Length: 130
Image 1: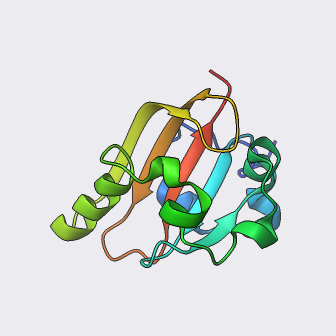
Image 2: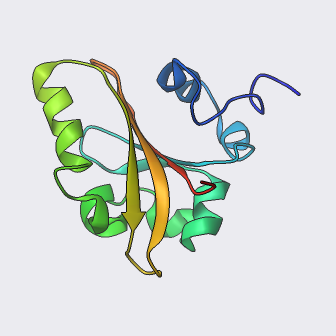
């Protein structure tokens, strides 16, 4: 095992660790990673999430997460938490039970929402193994 493959969905301090990974390292993780910038445009999308969601990276990268990629996340439970953390200047590290519904049958997942004050990247992590 190495430090990357040892990263788990529940690891403490995960925002800082994920932000240091390159694409090949992100692709070794056993949970979905969607990284996006301050304008909500997707800038990171790992293999696990691509295969589970059935969306290729070229279709997702550069697209607004909450309107074009996953509008089912554009609500008070997900998108609003990122906005609130940004407005408050605080960190965000929340894990919630969720049901993904867009382009697929409803799928129960856990989402981990990560943002750091002043951080360039924010993350939605998706764990499908419940």
